[in-house]
Length: 332
Ligand code: KG4
Ligand code: ZN
Image (cartoon, rainbow, N blue to C red; front, side, top):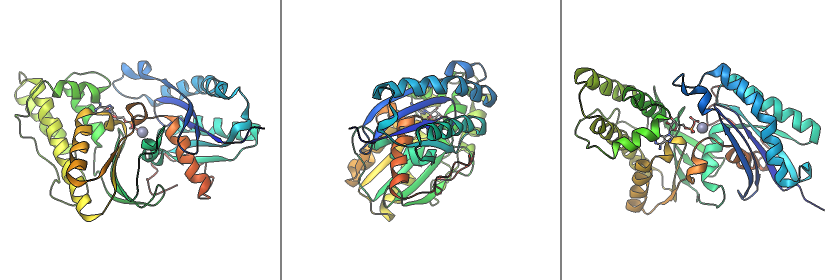
């Protein structure tokens, strides 16, 4: 007889339709992600109306594909977890409705999961990496957060951004440099070819744990306006250097104040080689274990949502399916 040892995760908060089957210890039995990259590329950003339509088309075929890994038999599904926020409302609704329908059809509990709690669990996919207490730096397109974690579910937010997120800033600066989409990786590649010769501001570097990136972004725009012929690789290198200085300073401050065993860095920007090198360096200096998700789990995926759902199940979290576009990390 088979046991119900897997959670089915569904992620549709932005522009990736993703479905996964994950066991209690983070073993990924299947994960399928359909990217909408080509649909949005011509708009230079995600077009919400088109995103929900594309999710609607992709979601059921993706569920079928993933379920094929268990012989299309729901017997091994213990529960279903679906992102309920933060994200685009129309996109979130497609995921939540699908999860509810599957829950009724299979008679399984359905948990509405916080996308940010998914990111925070991503380094424990495939192999357990995080040791608690830990410091968490979450750097994605939508969020910049520095947190202290007593456990996977006991989270204290130390600081967040007052304006743009790191990922958003990377994307906007990439656009100013005509690097196309996706901006972050292209900017990283250009930066390694240049020198950090421009001294851009390091906003709020001396103050606490809050972040601000809009001033840095404006400085880049002003330089490009004043000197259109400026070496673009040097601009990229100088911008990345400013971001790394700010992130590094805040993380070092938090390490001094909050004793921790590991430094967890998650979110799309954690795919950046420069950020990864910074984290390795800080961890070596402070005898911390660096916990970064493998590259494939750094960006949005349903495996991290399924793993987070195990925490919901084991902590008797509410089965809250209200879609919430601006859900904070403190919420279930
Ligand atoms: O976590 P994510 O996949 O989606 C959100 O939930 O926001 O993060 C997407 C962000 C984008 O801003 C993208 O430019 C950035 O992650 N990103 C990178 C890299 N790869 C993705 N930023 C810098 N360097 C990269 N290699
Ligand atoms: Zn994300």
